[in-house]
Picture (cartoon, rainbow, N blue to C red):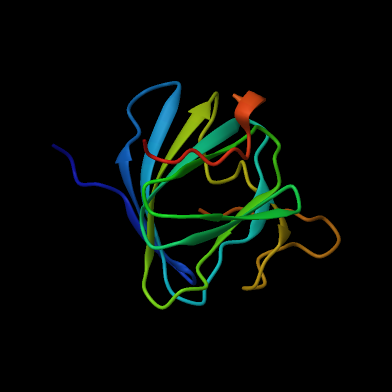
Length: 139
């Protein structure tokens, strides 16, 4: 097994769990307390987020939804989204990206707490829409 890609970010970190398929990529993402990712969208991929631990505040197209451990939410292609951790322990999620391209340059940042939006463009790279935004609780 090859070494997994790992990256530290201002908001936490991520580890790529799987990226050898042409139609999906899987990451484990950790968001530290009081931190949030940029408000962003993607033109070539949708995402499915499953919350492993903690409670996430997910913004999707301007609507904020609380997503708890064991629940999931779908982010559609071109959906403006962000995840925030307003709690006092890490939020851990599994992100399944599905689409045609998974590079970190398929990120258009709309807002960013860390100065990564290019002035006037709303861009910058970082590292199935029918039920988009619907929180799925475990049964």
